[in-house]
Image 1 (cartoon, rainbow, N blue to C red):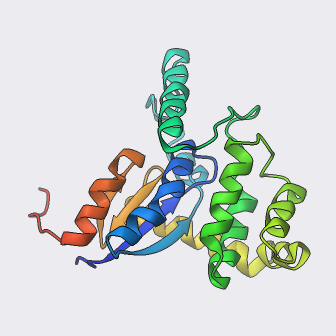
Image 2 (image 1 turned 45 degrees about the vertical axis):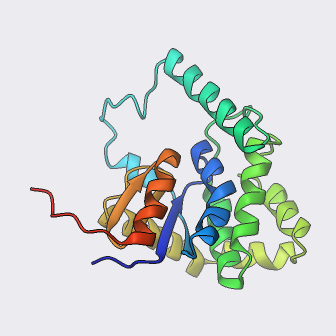
Length: 208
């Protein structure tokens, strides 16, 4: 069942293409009067369920890896986004995702998400480290110690696990992904199509 006018943005903090999507999705959604639902999650548990998958999407060749970063460099330049290849890649997005859940609850999730991505992909800072995430939180005018305590509480950890299980149930396999109802669009290059779908709510027959 379609839910026109609403788009779910599923993103992983280790994903550079999610960095691109996060930088532009709020502006583009506002232009179409589409409500945006920020959905941080982790890809690791999804990949762990297919550990023997030989897909090049998980194990790119050196040439493909170089192409991806060059592609990102071009796209970031076009968007006016800074890009610095991380000295460690991929970095764990666990703490950032847990913190994002708290930030979303309190209404500053978009700002935190963009700031955490900037720290990772523009400044090469280790977003797996509590001191880095704490600094990002503090720079947004929030009490870092309090936010991090809530982010690492058991109840919030369970929430993030449940979010990952929901992603699996709904067929998500990569990031960024955009859901309009149960219609899924995968990849930064599908963002415009997802927004158009959310605005128009078209209908297609089911597959198979």
